Length: 297
Image: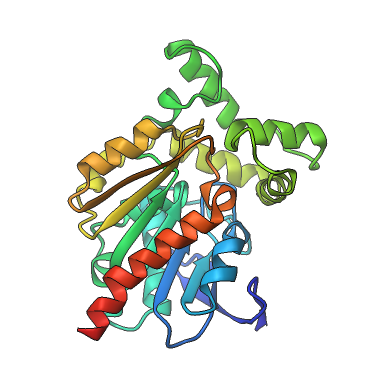
């Protein structure tokens, strides 16, 4: 047992995925409180959800886990959307009672994880509602605006080279923070938030970053969006260069039970860090509307 981000004791668990990968899982908050499951994105870790955990753990059971190769979960030779779905199923099976329903919130690759697992039995059993933050289902490289050129083959090629770079990120220097801020955060992001995101991203091993960049560059989960049959809200920053708003609107239009898109003016890709109160508030609304009402019925 360790001290959680919220200051209360965190229960640490291990969820074993279908291929044997051992996933680091943390459970924060009261055991009998309504559950929320948080899935982080590419190059991040459970630390990315610090603000949400710190707030929600007062009256929710907050379950956060490290994706394979990230944080305290060891890397695996298997990197695929099917593996992400397997991992989420393993976390749900390990942390939730049979039939217990939770709100699932994913950021970037974590939201793609929820989409990849949308038709899986464990998700059908346990998902009461979903929040998708700053994500896409396909055409990630072609529609990214990280490289400031007009859309086309040259921009797509250059974007693929940038996002798929094998180069080590090195120490968190002022230049490194400026690059990360440009690529992933809004122009008005506070320096301490940029520093937080930079330290999280730079902690991701280079080989892991590259392996998952190849999965993301070939991503095609358009078919999975229609399988996510629970109420689903989408959040995106208008200045998101990695997954611009076009992705959020395309997903929302294809969802069977869409709760619409919330656009956050001037914010970038790191919405749970850039707009913690709004993201946390959306999670609370989903819990109150789709979890607690059913339990009290």
